[in-house]
Length: 246
Image (cartoon, rainbow, N blue to C red; front, side, top):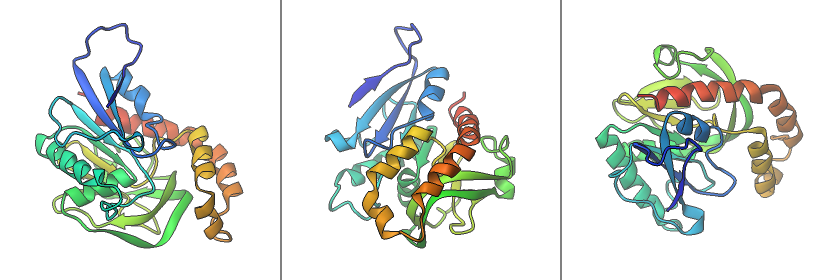
């Protein structure tokens, strides 16, 4: 496990968040400055470097689980998935602030007892996201427009966990964001990305894009990114700030 801290000049930080990172190109992006500005110290578990996550949330005040190309059902190939599920369960029971992005959202759904499965198609690129009635009223989503364009890269989806609140939907995948309790948020879409990160996604997945030639246009993704990235970053910052505020 590795440690990162903002340049606050403070020798001791009272709050600490653990970030679980599955692959190098899917880092915390715009989540990190929000955590630092909110007074959190940050520790990473970088699974792609062989680091292993703790099995409970003890010692941390929040949890971020990022995306990755593997799936919830791939525990035979990636044994750390079972440890992640135990960690998420521990964080849910503790009532800690939790943010799951893409694969992280799927892991949260599974840890909370819901089914995760392949969708009928893949969502890769920019798609409209619409808030539900509950989303419009949600403390972390209420500052967002009801419909906005967000960046997606996934083929799997999930059922809603029992007792959770659906916050947002898209045309292809109705379960795009949910909340468990007061402060555990699962987002199927990528609110954390920068323009450079999206370029990294495209460069890291040429095989997948080749298989989808004629369905997904990488050049259009680049053009759409220039149109929408500034709004996405601003909207993401608002949501992350509210999730991790006191």
